[in-house]
Amino acid sequence: MNSWVTTISSDGTPILLVIGGVLLIAAAIGVALATWAQRRRERQREMDRATPERLDEAAIAHWVEEGRHLFNLWQERADRVAELHGRLAAMADQVEQLKAQVRRDDELRAENLRLAEEIEALRLEQDQLRTVVARMGELIQRASEARPGRAG
Image (tube, rainbow, N blue to C red; front, side, top):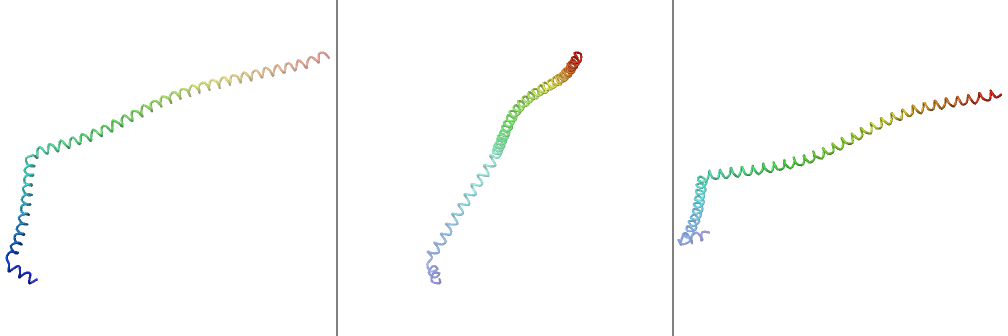
């Protein structure tokens, strides 16, 4: 390692090359930093100049997005209302059918009541007829019994 150091120190060319390389790298870094700083300043100026416009654009974009969201929400609710309206109409039809069935059931109950009353009246009449027939049977039997006794 001493031999390498003595070789470099005896000749100035390698030292100049190293120094030149370091300066070249430092210059490249300086240019990169200067370019970056310049772009940053330009963006800042652009933002300073266009801030109201950008704010307006951002606000409008926000309002448009919010409006789109509200429209989609409104559309979903309108679809839901239409669905509920359809279901309500179907339920109204079912209610009408049930009312008609109840009316038929009421009519059948009234008819059953009328028939039950008619059956009861017929049973009473049947009982009266049985009583009359039984009485006629008794009278016929008495008459039959009374005839042989007269003949004898």
